[in-house]
Length: 507
View (cartoon, rainbow, N blue to C red):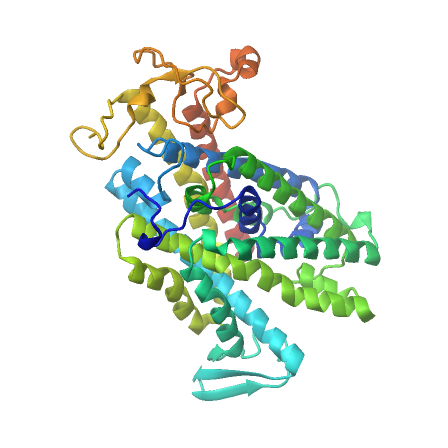
């Protein structure tokens, strides 16, 4: 399904470079950033720093490979159409691969949304109790009726700990978020821009607080004694690739994909490393505390009041803009693959996660389960599936050189893999975006794996530059799909290791 008609539930191609940068940074720097100082204190500065840099590069490459696969779809060589992740898998994968992608993507998005909803609602409930010394809720279990609290319970995750409730904080967060989920992605950009600016301001406030407290460089060794959480947390922090197709479909034509991906990735990596280091040097963190807990416990007077305000503001500023984005992506994919119409897509994407979250609002067990299980699911959908789509696209473009005559060409008399007639052409020169500078083609019998297909965007454009061919390419003359196979095998092993380490730690 191609097209960006607003009447079909999609947005227009209006996202600017600043909006793209803000959206990508917001998607990368989630609430998990508050756990980085304790991670650096436990694991040391070396391995988390290496892990952040590696996952930043891998996330950008995975996103770029997904974009090249999108550009291989006929009529979308300049991303002038609309191709979501599930519709791309429907084109490139067999039925099992398509259904698996559809299930894993939706489970991943709904899990992240439910986790964000629960944490945001709990934060809002605590904030209302702190400000007004009162909070209310409609209680379903164990004592149906209206419930209220005037003092915080000790050691609880919610003011209504142990009950199933529809809290005032939940209702406020829902009223703020649900309308944004019904809007399109391009219509949400003012929220994303504002959230990005506020988040950056909070980061600077944190750094100022760190220096006000004082830095103790002895708190973070080079290599710490506990490495078990490094892989799992950093992989989870860079699980943003599933948001890329919807952004690409609605960015302006003049917005560079590579520049957006790498600039936002590098910026986010620097933020991660800086907060991990400076927060770890400044704060004494014990037990299950995170950055926000340690800030309120390490400050006094006006600085403490400032830290308390930030402890409530940060989760809301980070989580609230992300909830409608995931809802929109669910809706886009359901409509794009024609699984349901706009009304039902809005229900499943926007309302369903809120309804399902209600029984789990007052505890952290379900959130922990979601976060733990999503390591496996997010690893698959954010890294393995995009790379496999790229590999299949490259493999089929080399094995089958179709003539595209204006309608979808069949693959072995089926419409599984439409390929443009230009896919057989090759080109030697590209610009920094990986786009062609010359549309001249050569004979289609030339099928060297290191020739550049003429789809407009290329994930590994550097492999075709004169510098690469005259230097590294002389020794390491490897086609892009083999790099993708290597990265797929590597990230698969890292995800499995992270899962095993989490299991060992839990036991």
